[in-house]
Image 1 (cartoon, one colour):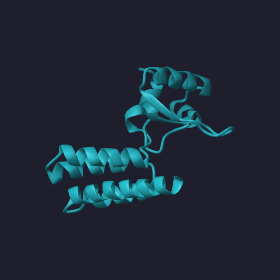
Image 2 (image 1 turned 30 degrees about the vertical axis):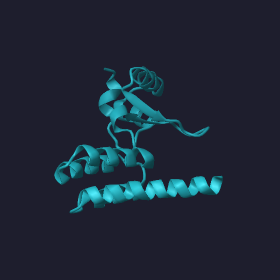
Image 3 (image 1 turned 90 degrees about the vertical axis):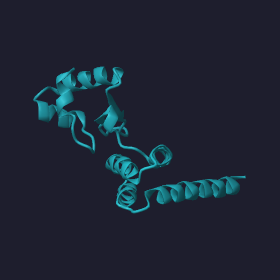
Length: 138
């Protein structure tokens, strides 16, 4: 494992410059380590716009978008009959949601008395919205 691995800890991701400052390595050495870890599938990056830095995460901690979150919620509700287990999954997913609104929704689901109902309603609302969008496009 490269030396950068232990410094790659922030949930919001880190830039090569931040990692270089944390580790005391040069930016070139940090970038080389990150590319090596990326080829091994251990880190993920979000490419920055031209002139902006890339943001890096450990692959298993990369933030999730809305559709990914919804899919995980739906699968977890199907797999776990226990509300307690479902709440654990929702809390974990909430810590990885990319947007603050998603984090808040998942927190409310994870503290709800009826998480299965909330998840099913979320999936139904998504399907209805997707249907309406398809009708508008046609």
